[in-house]
Length: 132
Length: 444
Image 1 (cartoon, rainbow over the protein chains, first blue to last red):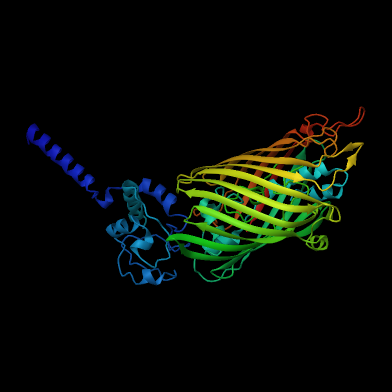
Image 2: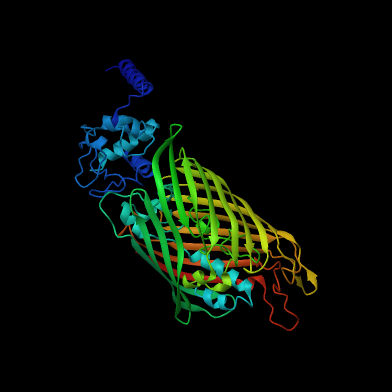
């Protein structure tokens, strides 16, 4: 490959990245899990534990990515979440956490106003993905 | 409680200033550690207290208090009982060192239902020579209606029955809630270090509301308990706050939780008529104060909590006694200021520095020998709490090892010869009131 082709490819990749960023469509795994651990402490840890089997006011978030909603047997979920019938994929978490919880799942017990910092949200989801 | 407190109470009639000094020490030891709440909620101690030990609250702890202590992990009923044991080694600048089991507390604390919860502390103090006194310390019973909507905004409305106006405050900067107030010869009614403060010796209640998570308001009223009841509840009659009537308590604050940071600004007011002694004429007393707080929480590795409280008390006295030929003034004022900054590392290591000032108007008859009741003191505490975090050996119990230095630079209106001892007599300077304390508290 010539230098000119390499330069064109690099420019194309950069522009594609900028377009994706501009559309707010960075891949979910673009986050930094280490930074996400700090976001977890800041946003989530008072109500949720990252440890397996440890419920607080909210259920344990150990292995949350890929888990069915409302599926921890010893946690008393709201009817709204029991009936949600979705899987906590990275995309679903991104959607859920980027808005007030009561808007995403009317009737939920969760009181959370949403995380509107895109990078922090990606970092957080990367941390949750790594915590299993 | 400070181990020397009761001995000092016994001689308070002769040396009321000593009582006040003891109250400062009492205040700094009066940590509220309630592992029963941790068991109820599944939370770690550190979720509600930056240093994993009370009483200072994080914003999450404030919400738990506002919710009437009713939050739960939904894992069934937990036994709402906790205990705290404290031992202390005291090294006063003047006087004998002591090492003793200083305090044992039992808490009945927790939820009764989704709307009812409470906090009751029964405190047993070593009054010296291994004699113990048990008293009903703090009381806060609540009914709360959560998840209300007013004008489309989240609203909490609650009722608190308690024995100290301001103890129930969510921000925990006011003296009765923080456990910290300046040692005072003539302190305000809202300062728990005042000789005749209302702390734990009144009964009353308030209605409070939190609107849109930010605006807090509270209105309440109180009456003092009869001296016979105070006696039955373990309080020395010498600390009777007198008979109070027509008492109103008002609190309004704005608080903002930004997850990584928190700040609040509030005002507080108390108005009452006080007869002290109870068969004497009544004083008209009005307290007006404000408080500012800031917390940097970040990722909870480095936490800074700062607060400033300024309370001014205006007094119209019911009598003007003549002391040594001098007629007391018919009115006066007192002002208590507390500035406290705490740095906490890894929710386990903390340094708290407090600057405490109590001042009052000139009155030669009421404040002999200098006519001024002013005092200035500092409290510096370094402590370690190894447990009480999610990742520690236990998250629902804790140990607190603390080293505390009390420093006085002014007392009774003077820095030297603070009691105006005549030539040849033992002179006491403000610095002679200094003390150093090592303490260990276990909460479980």
